[in-house]
Image 1 (cartoon, rainbow, N blue to C red):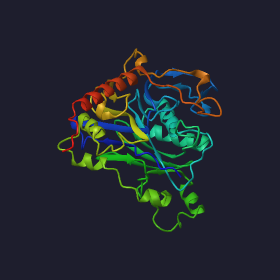
Image 2: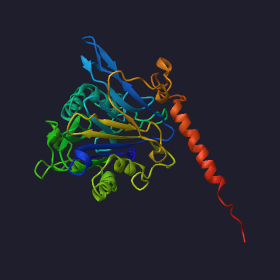
Image 3: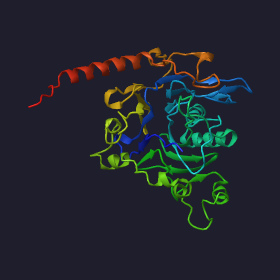
Image 4: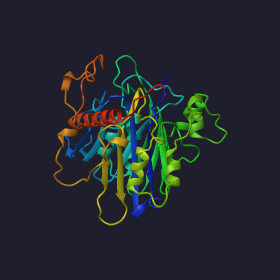
Length: 373
C-alpha cells in the first residue's frame, strides 16, 4: 500500500488570529514536475438532467453552480484546494486506511473539493455535498499521472467558512467529521479524528464491527479503528505546534511563513515529490470586508509569491496561469490512461523555472571552489 504524500492544511480562528478573521492555509504536495494551475470558474446555471464530467466519471450536474477559484493539478478536473464566492474554502489530503483504496475509477478527493465548492454556501453544506456524492459514487482511481502504477488513496478534507470548520475523514463511502469553532487545527496526511465526532455515516460503526476492526463495546476512536499500523506510527504534523507557539495573534503572513518554513515543509526539495502550490485565505467575520485568497500557482512556497484574489463582478481570466488545453487527445482522458506525459507548464510556471535556475546559477557561481591542501 502506497504511503500518502506529506501534505497538510490548517485553520486559525479569531481567538488565535488577528483582526477577527478566520485564516486558512494549505501546502499541496504532489509528484515532482506535476504542474498546478490556478483557474477561475464563474457561476452558471445548467439544464435539467445534465451531467458534469469529472476526472474519471460523470455525475449529475447541479441546477446552479457558484463561482470558484481553484488550485488544481493540470491533468485533473478537480482541485487540491480552492475557495468559492461565499467564503467557503476546502483542502483535500490523501490518507491511507485499513480499507483498501480502490483502483477502479470513481470520484477523486480532488473532484469532491471542486464539486463541494461549486454547490455549497457554507462549510456544513460542503460536508453534506461530499457525503452525498461519496454515498452515490464512491471514490477511487489513480491520484497520480502515472501509467505504470495506480496510486490510490482515501481522502480527508478541511472545510472552512467564516463561522466554522469541519474536519472530514473518509474510508471508502464511510466518513466521520468534527466541527471546529475556535483555536487552531491542522489536517495532515493521516487520520486524526478520535472520539469527538459531530457527524458520521449512519453505518460507520456497524461497518467497523463487520470488518473486525472494532468490538462494538469499547469507546469508538475513528483513527484507532481505521488507521493502519504504519500510519499510527507516523510522526504528527508540526504545523499545529508552530501555530500554537506563534508570537502574538496569527496573521496571513504567519500562515505564509509557516508554509514556507522547511521544518514544516520538509518535502520542498525531495527527489520524487514537491510542494506544487500553496494557498492562504483571510475570511473576515465582521463587517462587509471581502474574503482575500492568496495563491502561488508555482512550486516551492519559499521561492514563490502569494498572489491575492478577491471575488468581484467581471473577473477576468488570467491565461498565464492556465496550462495548455489538450481536449480529447489528452493522455489523461484516453484509455489506457497516462501512456505519455505532455508538457503542461503554463507561462507563470516557465517563468518561475527560469528565475529559479538563474538564482541557483548565481549562488553556485559565487561559491569558493574547494582546494586541497
